[in-house]
Image (tube, rainbow, N blue to C red; front, side):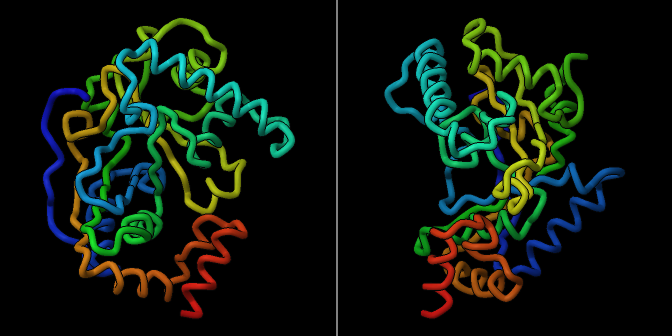
Length: 262
């Protein structure tokens, strides 16, 4: 994790009205393209780092070992998922799919839908406080003082993303080959789960495994009190935000119906 300022709690979110007010305030401060720059994320438990799955492995001691493990996981995912995919996905698309289907990657999920982020903050751990994060993703490159290599929000076709994924999927280079800063990236809407969640990602690197205010001065964190989770879930349900609408598969349809019928 990079050194620098931590993300302090700005306030609490106890209702859908609160999250809309927070989102509107940030959107108002964004001069242009707020629909792609306003990113949100929800944590069901307070205190979790803004850190992707590959950096949470407890027994990995070196970056070389981390990369070797990730390369094998990525290779196996490509092989075993072949008959479940359309077969036209790029290496970047497959890597994004890994993240959306809960494989450890260097990606952290974000969404441009504040209600989806609030869903994730309330969906589990009813007895624990959750957290809601929001930021202007465009400011990641500004705050990190990125070089001319990157500025703004990348797509999967940007060289910095292609080269980063190539290190993993094509076994090219080593852990020192990654760029030195966190990169915000928006994937093509080729998968239903990405579409439903309005999914975006931050790509994290060995020198900056966790996101903090040091990487983005606009990053804000709000507590979602455990006592408010039940009410928030009810409000989200009225607005059509539930297990099924967020994931769109049969497993989550069954979860939603069980909840709906008490």
